[in-house]
Image 1 (cartoon, rainbow, N blue to C red):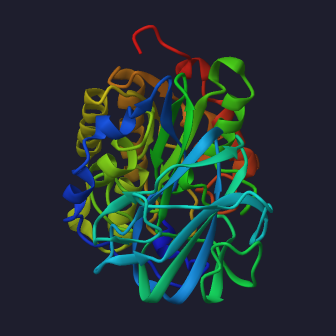
Image 2 (cartoon, rainbow, N blue to C red):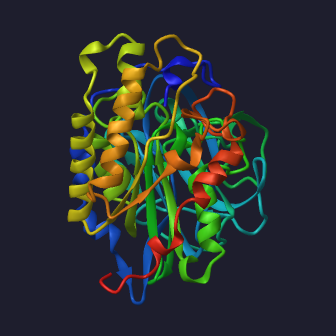
Length: 422
């Protein structure tokens, strides 16, 4: 949540994101049309997602290929991908795009490569602020497996739309179109560029959970390449049980994200439509946010953005109401403890009082369809404003892999069984 204060793997410092003036472009497609598009007794359901952020010190691509790895939550017999130029300042040309099964590193499984088309054409220009979806291709996509999505971007392009804390080794080629290559020499990156979603054509009973939050939902401080974010671990649990095995989990976490203001990513109220309500097959939302709204303003010298518990609660209520209007069940995660982060002023007793006030509302208001008490799971019984030592990654704010697993295991899977009124 507070990665504005840390050095990223790429060495870039976080800055405030662009104003979300382009949100209307993402709403040109009615959410219900995207979420319920069907073909016979099957439908499109998201199996993987990453939320777009603005990069104000962007990677410069020069006619190169990006091969990016998406870890699926459910499988299917057909696949399509979603690309975003949401923060672009000019049209993004995709010269070629392919999808294949990953063989590890930058390699793909021979025979699994499929060229992607866009309305029957091999290339597309994505306008600034827009999202595009590829045509479907037939591919036996495994649950809890890895897909390699390769994008050739011709010309000189500033990759202003990305997701920084990807925690997955992705691959940038030398100049050239390597989208069909079985393997290629590459430069690694732990970020994602332009790729924001993967859908599979799946059984009608399939549905998706969207997890919206800050750095803890994003999985910050978990082990890269091992898929130890709590949404990934929740997907593993769901897949292991028959009644929930067709339930996908989509990660809409952004490190440093707030509900009411932008900072590292567009605030949740502003990104709700494109990151949650437009997700294919979304039927559930887990919302875990509010700590960064409390902690960040004084820390980075923006006292005018200080908010009260009542303002945070109002933001939660807005998200609940809009998600309910789209037919989603909405579950609230309590705010986890954060005392001890080694920056002066990051935590104060007054901030703790705000956290407790928001948590009390989440637990008692009955505004959410159910409550997931992450605070109870993660807090130190001997000092409840701090993380349990065995769940602490070392910065006293973010869980380690064991802590993320505890979060996933605290979620009652009965919340995601088929409901009679669905």
